[in-house]
Amino acid sequence: MVSEMQSSMTTDTVFTVRNLSVYYGSLLAVRGVNLDIPKNQITAFIGPSGCGKSTVLRCFNRTNDLIPGARIEGKIEYHDQDLYSKKTDPIDIRRRIGMVFQKPNPFPKSIYNNVAYGARINGYQGNMDELVERSLKGAALWDEVKDKLKESGLSLSGGQQQRLCIARAIAVQPEVILMDEPCSALDPISTLKIEELMNDLKQNYTIVIVTHNMQQATRVSDITAFFNAEESLESSNKIGFLVEYDLTQNIFHNPQNKDTKNYVSGRFG
Amino acid sequence: MTANSPNSGEDRSSLWKPNRQASRRVEMLVKLIFGAFALVSVATTAGIVLTLIFETIEFFGEVSLLQFLFDPQWTPLFSNQQFGIHVLISATIMTTGIAILVALPLGLMAAIYLSEYASLNTRRFLKPALEILAGIPSVVFGYFALLTVTPVLQTFIPGLQGFNALSAGLVLGISILPLVASLSEDAIYAVPRSLRDGSYALGATKRETIISVILPAALSGIVASLILAISRAIGETMIVTLAAGQNPTPGFNPFVPVATMTAFIVQVSLGDTPATSLAYKTIFAVGMTLFLITLTLNLISFWFVRKFQEKYE
Ligand SMILES: Nc1ncnc2c1ncn2[C@@H]1O[C@H](COP(=O)(O)OP(=O)(O)OP(=O)(O)O)[C@@H](O)[C@H]1O
Ligand SMILES: [Mg+2]
Image (cartoon, rainbow over all chains, first blue to last red):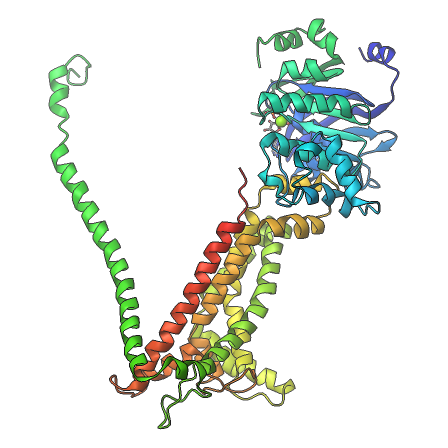
């Protein structure tokens, strides 16, 4: 399967995940994930609730470190850099690998400062006004807010807030943008806007998106990874694992695994 | 056996006899009793305010507002009576100001440490410690200021007198510290986790996140706790009476004995001033002033929180 995909794509790999397991305290949440995330593509994570999609996503920018007791086994390489080696600075990683969350979470600051904040703390020396404008344009929000940059980010609608969060993420000029169900709190029109936006962003960024929406996965993603969870023998919680990943059209029209087939055709989950 | 079987309908209906009439009567009674208690507290407040107002009106029948505001001294207990309230207010401002200078930075730092840095175990130990500090009776703080803090301060501030606003203010600050710390911590704790995550995800450090995201988001709660602490410090009586003295001195010298508004009220209430005399009525005018100041502060706090509280969702 991996070789089949590699032959169909000539792009570089951004993340190489090898035998990744994630624990919360003593609980094993996800086991044995092997995965490659290709550059300038949109990779979608799908699967039933609790199977560890967010958990794996958070490993990519080391935001799992912020959860007390969370730890990983296995290896994630970001280009050639070992993400979890002692020499790797998570702060630096998070600047290069941005994140957009399920619920829009703009800071209680002005629209302008929401976008400028990340650039400021990362010591951006260029013209801030230009950067803010460029980022807001990149997030397809500029026209709606250009006359009220001083107003609070919280005064925007949910869909606008989410695009503000995208603008905030691209303002620090990351290479990768991780999105954890970015549209699940939004109405269909805002969702569509963000999906269109993702298509544009693909030119410059590598995107990994978690979604519960099958149509969304087929509409936006190039590659889809299907996760599932199974009861474990020794503990009460379910353990998540990667079932298969492939080009999105293969996952949806010609899956290799029976569970994948059932899931994408809506028979469970 | 048969009584429990679902078919014995007659038995069941005879077993269930809800007395709706009686329970309705009990409900009414309960409502009445609780209503009466609520009324008592409202009536008490109204009574106190009305007394204040009436006595204050009587006071101003004998002393003009101009005298009250602009007399150079505060000497209602002497034969040449003067009523410059600013003498007492300046003392209150001094003790309160010093207290806030102590309580705000320390309280805020404690709050930040507790909510952002302390491990679960440290927290478990520190929170009760703060509560014990809050439980110390103010008379103990007063003696601590008078008998410990002032002598220590006198070793390096030569001009410092036995009663002074400085040590009263410092200890007053310690006494309201738990209030500032615990209310600010609540405000900081209430900042949604998603904001912290958003900041960290941009590559912010903990310090940057605290200063640029968490504190601004918690600002309204922190200001509210600050204003409450100011009100508490203004109304505090024991510490300032014991440690700052009862000697109305105009101006803002923290090294000499002064009398705050509360200290003056204590002095007259405990003394042998006849209840019909003008001197006695002054305590109501002073009380009214205190009341107006704290009322204003509460209104400001209320307005500030309403205006600046961030609504997440
Ligand atoms: N902070 C945490 N602490 C402890 N356990 C956690 C934590 N976050 C997730 N888990 C556990 O890890 C497992 C995977 O959760 P995760 O949130 O990654 O699933 P998900 O696939 O994103 O689900 P959903 O689709 O509902 O978002 C679950 O069993 C969950 O209980
Ligand atoms: Mg999730």
